[in-house]
Amino acid sequence: MLFGKKKRNIVRLLLVEDEPLIAFDNEHFLTEAAYTIVATVDRVADALAIIANSTDADGNAEIDLVLVDVHLADGSGLDVARAAQARGVPVMFVTGNFPDEAMALATGCLTKPYAPRDLIGAIAVIDARIGGATPKRLPPGFRLFATLT
Image (cartoon, rainbow, N blue to C red):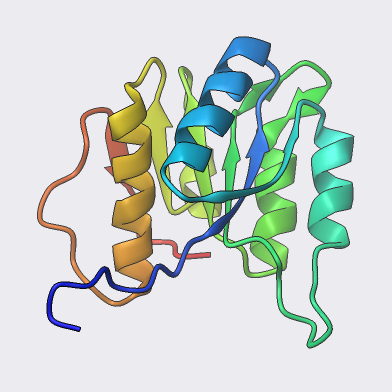
């Protein structure tokens, strides 16, 4: 199909955010953009359990990307990123305070506050990168790192 949409590499998202309004807004905007939200959680322990148990019958991850804040009420999003990375699931941090040591754990970081279009654009950049393309332009507030998983 000449003008059809190309197939996404990223469809299923895990949202880890302890600010209820941000979590709700992200769920809404991402669902409207045709992403599937596997779960939205606000605790490190809940995110770790979902990541550990999210495989299909063939042993493949049922999560395509984890969106995680660095600072969560019950711990660090870095622990979530380590668990996702160990399962081969890419991570994008969405945070207002990004520590440099987290670069090795993530594909990118979107700085809070951000517009919904920038969130969707950042996911699209990671999706293109997974597909082997080099992004021409990054959304405002988004940094892309060398790590893919």
